[in-house]
Image 1: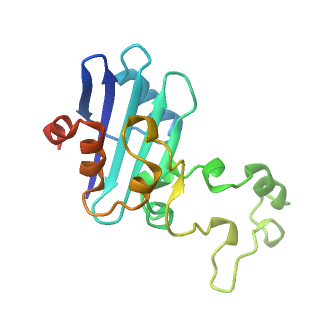
Image 2: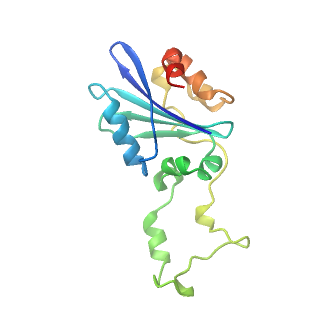
Image 3: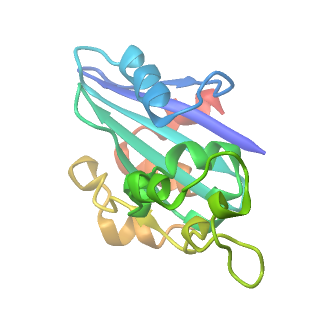
Length: 172
């Protein structure tokens, strides 16, 4: 089961809204959705959680590039919502290299990427554990160390540290 919410920081505190990710296909789509929830280009946090498996936080500050933290990259990679967050840049991949490996695009053997012994493409393997900007919430009240040690109701703990637990619970 998934949960997603947007928390927008305002002069009066935090405002939360439950959000549907059905129309979100890329990180850019998610960032645009977050910017729409923003008041005066203030900080917006997008929370995405798959119960007992992983959580992700995307921070959008005005027109800056989104910052991302994911608690377990390998678990998120098995999720359609997680795949939105696991960008080539975050994973340290160069999409140009992937294109260079494809010699023939007609589906012949020469154009097929080489796989490992178990049939997996080594470039598609995602490491287990946290990935991304673990200092994403430092200035909002949650340290890197606190974020990296979260389990259970991680989003609730984050919301409590940010002073917006009641607002988050209202949309849960």
